Length: 466
Image (cartoon, rainbow, N blue to C red; front, side, top):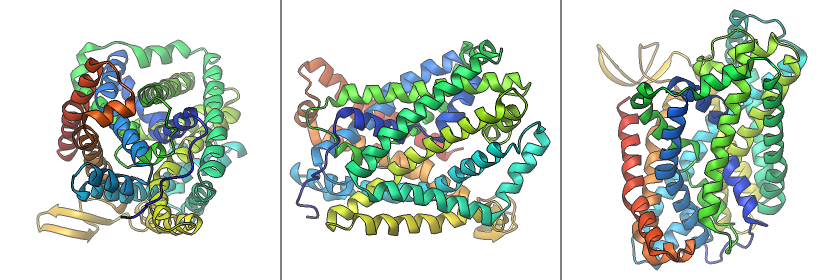
């Protein structure tokens, strides 16, 4: 069996794990997607549904990953292998962790490209390129960026190197020190941006947009809330399992996971409260969807007082959030190969980063040179695996995004929560979580064995049918 020796390095405290898990969860989606969804799907009603889904689906899966990681004390693949053998189950359970490693690398390949856009915008915002800009010009500027493959590759390379550099330095010198700096800085920048929003004169407009309670939209927001609750916590890849392997033995898993879930939600809500008053102050439409971050917000920052400085703060915030998330995508695969080959962490980090970088070129070209290349095309002439210039189908970027977010992530999360609930069993769960009250233990097992799997299945089927 690979990995006879348990992981030697451990986080200095459970708060470092909280920073790591929160950094993994807080990403680009928290900065623009959650606030936008809150405004569209009923405001306060959506937030309540989202918190309910977080409690019943998202956090049970995160708890399952953490429990497996700390119990196994290895990379996700080896932990599942060893624990399955220990419990007399099939080692095929580890295939989900292998899929998670591949999924994390695939996500990182395009995540790095998108995160590179934020690096470009830090520079452009700092130069004053968006001062007084119109919506049409902002759209043209973003179009010019995505149409330039050389520029995209440069920033993609920089961001991937930033991610790999942290991983190469190991758990304590790399991950822990980086998280001690990045996460407090991320929170500080968010507070600064939030404080600035209060001065715009439109803060209450942002509050009303986010928290108006519209029960009529609850039904429409149920599936989006369930889906976002699952995906926002970065579960299903094995990242949390990898971080859980470094978790101190005495750290309370339950309280820690609740803290992470609350922090993730607070950051998302604070981002909305920080951004939408700025959008209203500039007289723009808040329901801009995906275009909010790279088109609408540059216009907003370019047309309000001190917007240039606050714009730089915002895109540094975006880059930090993306950086902390990207680290969690690469770490499980590096941990696996380091588990099998002692002393190879640096070599495997750069090798895996290079693979992600190469795959990322496909995403770069999806926005320009390969924009007409479509996969899985269905038309009048029948089905084609790929075609050039066809209607419909998916670009390379769309294909990778679809495979990871709609198939691999939910399947991984489903297997992890079933493994924790059914294979590890009642006594292991009780021991790891130090649960003395049998009622709490029974409720948790119901969540792990029934409620969370059903929720994931609903998300999985709904995403496939989109």
